[in-house]
Image (cartoon, rainbow, N blue to C red; front, side, top):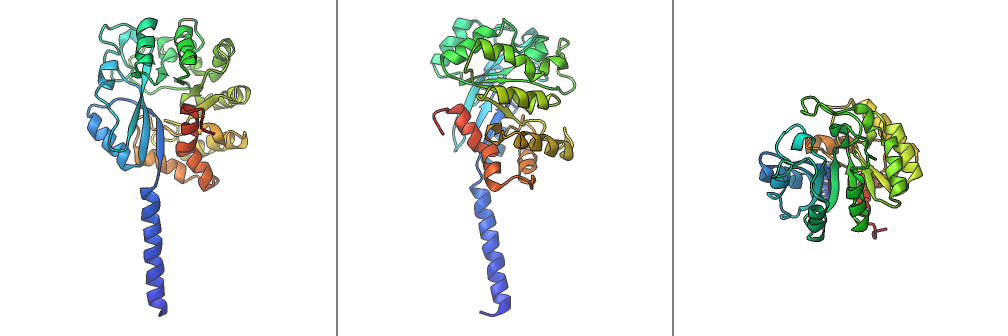
Length: 288
């Protein structure tokens, strides 16, 4: 074969490998919320390679989401709802307008398979600690039925409509109390705790069942790239590569995935762990 032909063959082979790799990309998004057009949202996720997504939004809107077309939806319980409303969108969390759903109602829906995890826990927006006694009955249900709990931590965007929000209540250190009261509770720290990511790392070191998602901080429109890289490197250097999970938080799905692919200090295997392997193990603890 002549050199020009050989070069062309190699280029075509590389393109085929690249296309095949993209087609095989697998993403487990552990942090999404409802959208005005659920079908369009799900199509974007599927196109990007998302095959599982953990959804938390108002109860009524959540019923418009169903698994299909290669995408499995896991439904969460958003609690508590400040003034009975979802932050930012300000729609009613529950049809009765309550901030806290009854424990018996929650337990029934867990048993019926309508609630796959407790989250997003909005303790910060409600102005209380993640270990507040009002939340403990919900955490105990999660432990009883072996479902995970996802808690909002760190900062919040503007115009969330929750006057009682306190950033200092987003410190993951506050979770130590509930984790000691309910040993073995499977919990994940949303947004990796940032700007309290060092505190998140310490909690994760102390409690091996605690994971973190990197939603929002992997969005280049929210956090500068160098800051994001530095935070991820801190988690990796702390030997936590097996407990970091991908989340988009309704950000641009392509941009948030790209933030991971551009981390040159991560191996291919480490990226796979973040994009889906760690989440599979966390949501299905029997997977090793």
